Length: 208
Image (cartoon, rainbow, N blue to C red; front, side, top):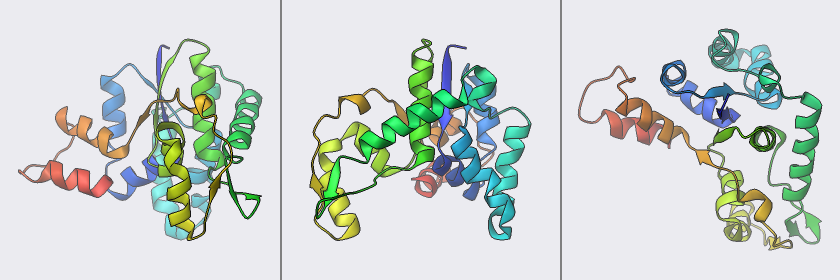
């Protein structure tokens, strides 16, 4: 294995809600990537929703990709769950000690999305090229534009948030792809069975 695409929960939910999960097996057949979901992501999008009727159908759709081997757990490619959990905790501890409100730390990331970064780290140590499929804005900003977090979080929660830490180098190394970008690739490859001049525009608008 030389390349891996790691899926966060939000990306799979986005594709599922827009009826576009079928692009995932199509993309896998045409690229030399292993498609990975972490245990934390699996819990969010399959295990928990299967017990809630409102979300069961979406969970079953994603589960079918997992059961068919299109999506794999990191353990199936040789990663240890203990190492993933340790790396996840370390990254969460760093990220959740950047911002404060009235002297109290603000949690800005969750386990599922940070577990994707942890798996990326562990695979990179094995010289595996990784790409993380994630739509979650805060995590992307933490890695791509951390200086803007203070302003964005203040606007989001309607309170003044203060940036305390300023060393963001640990988060600069990750590479991301969004749902809309995956859909664009699928469209260009002919994996979208829709016709019409407005199809691409509708796809991008629906998944942005």
